[in-house]
Image (cartoon, rainbow, N blue to C red; front, side, top):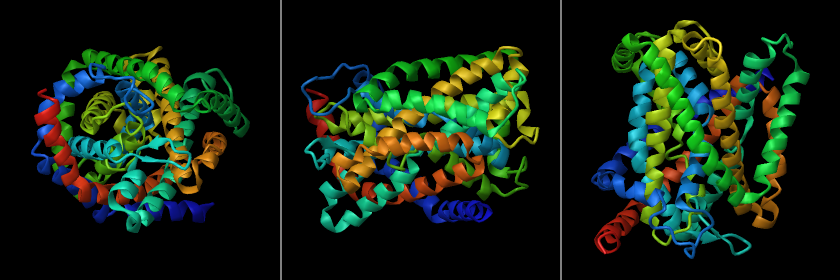
Length: 452
């Protein structure tokens, strides 16, 4: 097991080196400039699309714009926003938050391009159903000679779409908030029992397919975001004198790295970019799988909706978590488990009931992520072996929920980082190559459709 842990750690560090960061951050900056910030000028229009103003039940696709964004947010607003932010601050210092913001801003442009492409170049699976996602974009827009890139994405996606991290942290927070204070000792059997309960809930939702996942996500996502934001705003109101110093510390440490890494600014940037990718997954290629299922004839509309994702996910939710941890000072405690660190922050500021609020947020955040990731993995496997057999992915996935309940946190995190890093390569390469196609569609939409 030590050799496996060492391999995963080394692989994660190798993959998330300068070349991948240049591809993600540099690619996002290129797309931002290439678009001339055009999508950002139509945020109000994006919100109107999200509200359903342009919905047509007869359009091709399976779910509404709102369900598509909710489903994508369900799969991205998860433990990366709570535990992941805490881990980023513990490993990279407060400055990691700043680089998460920068990554998210670039990520909005990346999401616009990748998700516009997901609808623009939808293909059909082996059973004739319309599908979207990087593998179909590569096949339909770039042709057969690029198919190895599509296969590479799906193989990495099969391993990246795993519930082990989310399950692991759900078990951790339930034990720390409910069981251990009640005198229940930590054990393998306790972890597995919680895992069985989670697996049962997951099975009831994901076996119902994308419509059920979309329906559940559209109801839970708004609730979980509002509850979490209100909770952290309460902590900020109770500690008003610490808010501005915490924000200043984030900006200062982003360029000095003195808080944790002793001046290694490059390491802070790496940590922030990694955690942003894990949080909002812009450029990784998972969200286009969900947005590609949206009911629409206009690819640009779905790109605009998708663009809102990183803003909600990282700039709002991750910032709330980061401020909560910095304001309360728990980031200096030496705690290495992200969810335990965040729970301490809630306990310090909201004694008695704070950890219970966090537990509710964590359970909803994590379980909705597990629902969304199941759909992503199933689509990847269906592309590889056919839709008829791809459905069996759900049973493998449910088994992984049980694995996650008893797995090592470090190994789980490194496995996901490795898979996410590999998925980003075909996604970003194909997106940059096809960026002119997106801009053609964008100009046509805003001159012919939007103004009509």
